[in-house]
Image (cartoon, rainbow, N blue to C red; front, side, top):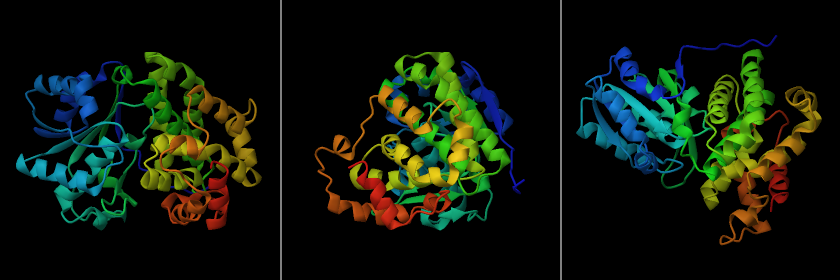
Length: 373
């Protein structure tokens, strides 16, 4: 068996209306003045009020920062840090929402406790001082950020995504409440669900895979694949609850292994053309699987023994009415074949590219992009 070293210390609270336990979870972590990082959509949906209510029951002071946008940049982090400093002392941070809110919460934790800039934490275990206790509460069915010690924060000027990781940044407690996904629109459910499926598939075959990560990944895949179609078409809380838990398991798989070329391809599409991350991943995933089959075909068959994995993924993408080409995503941008070499160069330097099971170079990335043009 492959050697591995895993830290499993994280409390997970799962169940309908489990957000009502937020106050108790905060007290357990000795929180008294709480910073909540979220976005305006969560505020409008009433979910933020549910969090406030749970904290009010335990007489816990709270301060809500709601200006996080998709794909958070250093600017979002610094604004949230300033908000926190204006309301000091803060002794606990809550990330409430999708991956963007939770990544931003981790980013704030780095700066608020250790100072400096986000670039100082680009990499692994760069924080030298203790960090604040934190709670992650996902409201989508596919982020996985709640399970991970890394925050993906883009540089404001270059839009390069920085993976900033530290064990101290990992949420101490995760609350998985299926009722928070009830208002999730079909499109958002689809793109986050596909992203979670990609997490399970890529982590299962990555070069850093190990028995623990593969255990998480295959269980995540089984839950996600079997519930995806029901969960995206209606607010079926049982199906969405299984997707929520499956996404968490896929996040654990990433934490204990890594991702691959589909995510490496997706990041430049998001930064250069504003294509939503989950859509960018769904575009590339079938082609990356075909590319990898000659190396890890047996593992793909182990993951999905009922038929062809690529065909199953394509059927799920079709079920979610997601685009098949870059042109369908960016009609106004008019991506040309001459742009693909630039995208390929950016994909080749993405962190996740080095963990793809089949070595992939700039020419390979360009050919992958050509397939979705």
